[in-house]
Image (cartoon, rainbow, N blue to C red; front, side):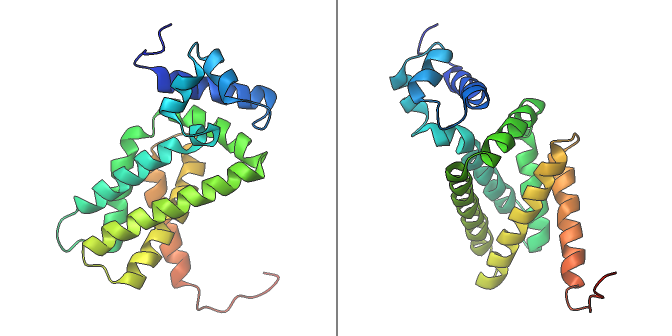
Length: 194
């Protein structure tokens, strides 16, 4: 196939996930990924800065969708309503095909500490995007920061549940409600051993 095929990025991603699962992340090279996809090494690097980006490139898209959802909220929307809108905006890319890839990514991340660290950096960038979008709406700095961190926790829980089926936005919104409820209970005494 031509290296200029319009689906080159998707083919590279699929090939990488297959090879990471088959040979391990560390033992897979960019050249092998390109070859498996029927493309050349230069094409790989046109789409991805390195093989770690194969696993996390979609998070930039998600961050953009989250920010768009927040910015599209009506004036006067609460920070929580903004997060609900962010999750709804991201739902469009959380497809069944992405669900399958997410399950593969979880296994790869669990097996490689370097990749796990890269994931944490991407999550920190996503939190910064959310915080910025909230700040642009006039949300006070600490509230924007807390809301962004809450968003990432709800996102993580939502993804875990979404991988079992259903709508990402529904799962993430439900996780957000649960987190709010549990946060409200943080000042209650915990009975140990109960």
